[in-house]
Image (cartoon, each protein chain N blue to C red):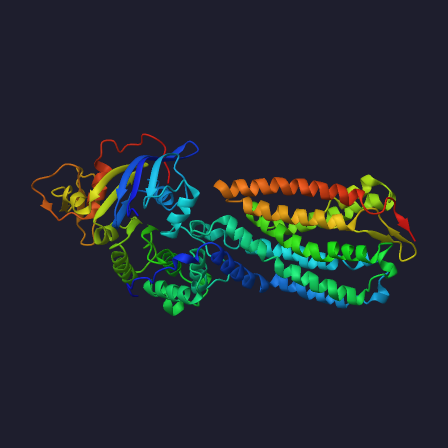
Length: 292
Length: 289
């Protein structure tokens, strides 16, 4: 069985709105970061890969299977974990009951094995102590971890996570990175996020989407390297900078498309590189209406 | 938190095993539903609370199970079906598709159905066959009347609840359907009161999931209306099958959709035949006694 995901010329429209256009990607096991502004098409891409949506154009293969074919789609879903950006929970369910219900739908029919697996994933996301607490009584961060727990069931070969760390405290984020890094040894983990530090800490490869198109696809280190010499600190915001902001020290961090000399350069972060990519591209002006 | 590796999912567990496990899970959720529990309590209370001596006509008491187990059961399964709608982004990408989940929910209707069967036996205990209150029907036809009025609605109501839950977004749809059906059964009965021999009035009365077969004016005169209680059961069961198939049609694609659509076409034809036979069969004229 193939262990990769491939997209060729994939597009998706919602009425007159184009959410994705001409996306060509190949994905192998590892953690792949998906960055982009709101409305870039990240969620649409994840939903396509999670078989929740069909593409308007192009061809998708997940683990060698075609999600357009019902039997193959079911086969993909057997090997898929998906945490959507937003999820509601049924009234009265505890964390254990909900994850157990999803495990049943994922064909874990042996009660003993299923319960052991549910306990394992709840432990992975740090919810084992409150597994019997009703989800509606949980905090937003805890609910996101319930949603993550169900995605981790069975350590699936394909794991799609849409902003999994939103509302999660720093300790849990660090632990989550450990969990995902472990899974990514054998699985394809696609992580859509606005948190560039998560991508920097976890991903070797990053895909930047903007207005439904892939703007960058490559190594995180290479993207960061492109920002070298273009980030500097100053006492005032520099008019030549693409973007600048006041840091905690009171000084201004400036990021510019053009390299500058005679300034106090600092080591660029992935966030700098991302902002540079977003602001520095000549074709980044709106060309068509897009939404995620 | 640990980064332990998962145990392997049992590969052989797909298909029927998942369906059976899902049915058990949904049954457990259904039997603790407060609306259903209230329906059972009210059915028991009305069945035990109407001694035969106070009943002039069987139709005055045998609609309680249809109201409670059928109507309230419809609301309970509607709630059960919709309970996962907010989790659909996750539930919808599991290997257990929507038609299978709908079928599992439909299977839950066996619980109110069995309650209906028990109610039938209790009913027969309190209102023995051959009594005047049953009208001019033979004893087997009297049983058919009771099955059509007590047992089948307890199956059909919950099945309709699943179908509504799958297709209608309005949260109060089951309650509205309950009121509409209640109103329709009563309105459709009116022409039979003034035109008891009319085939059209009989057809209108039977174009419903529940119908009355007798009428008495405070016990003074007993009228047994036209129509076959046997074929009416066939018509009701066809409606039940339609509800199941319509529920399963939601989210079905490929071969499953083709199969469900074909079966639905056949069942619609059977339903039409049963309806015609139910209206045309039985007594050719109303029987007054």
